[in-house]
Amino acid sequence: MRITGDGIWGPPDDRDEALRVLRRAVELDVQLIDTADSYGPDVSEELIAEALHPYPEGVIIATKGGLTRTGPGQWPRNGRPEHLREACEGSLRRLRVDQIDLYQLHSPDDDVPYEESVGALVELKDEGKIARIGVSNVNSDQLATARGLTEVVSVQNRFNLSDRSNEDVLETCTEDGLAFLPWFPLGSGTPAALASEIAEDRGVNAHQVAIAWLLARSPVMVPIPGTSSVDHLDENVAAAELELSDEELGRLADAA
Ligand SMILES: NC(=O)c1ccc[n+]([C@@H]2O[C@H](COP(=O)([O-])OP(=O)(O)OC[C@H]3O[C@@H](n4cnc5c(N)ncnc54)[C@H](OP(=O)(O)O)[C@@H]3O)[C@@H](O)[C@H]2O)c1
Image 1 (spheres, rainbow, N blue to C red):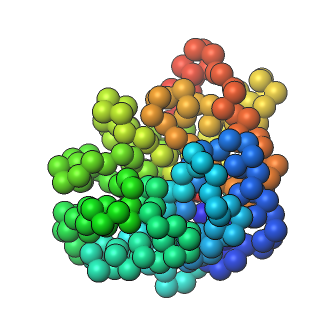
Image 2: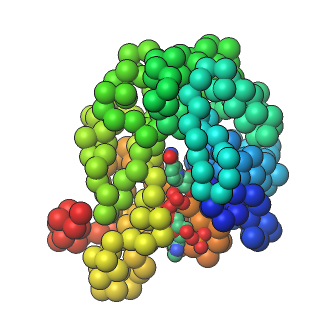
């Protein structure tokens, strides 16, 4: 999402750096890249294909449909089956694939029964256009509804040190082995103050503490920190090696 312009609209300020970020991610063994048709719109998927197609074995490009764009920072929902089909076809074209590894329903749409939106993804999967289905921005009831209709392999909800309102959904994912992709994992670039304190003691940065905390939080956690910078990407990937002590995890547990 961060390899686009301001308000997640249009091309990024530094296109070459965005392409470098994508190529470096794969070099560093990043196995999942999260995008959406609505990022740009189209820009993020197009850059991913330009930088990485043909995609190396084992790299999952996870995209989403269900939000539309009317301007910078504006994200009207559209969960109608006909829109989702069109969105998926567009993503297949831009990503230059016959099948999308992981297709996530970006958000429930209050104007469309959730069953109908999920049903559209089930049809696309039956047709082979989607390998796996994920959901995003769901509560426990919506997740249960989706799982009653099809196999759901992942949930992408907001979750970070300062915002743990999706704890119940995370718990279900942990118990049942669904991947949990926390969005705003770095608090949108400003991790909680306590992360900075711990980072200073450990000689790392606060973003790395935020990622290490997420990884320690559940074995199904798949952090998707957004960045437009190779240096930040390097730091964020290195955070996978950072082990927080029980005492640090205890302090962070109380920090929400
Ligand atoms: N499903 C949904 O509804 C939804 C909603 C929002 C986001 N998402 C997904 O979640 C991903 C993550 O969310 P996000 O990108 O909005 O927020 P985030 O990962 O919490 O924070 C990203 C921000 O942190 C900065 N940053 C990253 N690493 C850094 C580092 N090591 N040091 C200093 N600053 C750093 C980035 O700036 P630089 O570019 O300068 O590094 C960027 O401004 C998105 O990219 C998107 O794929 C999904």
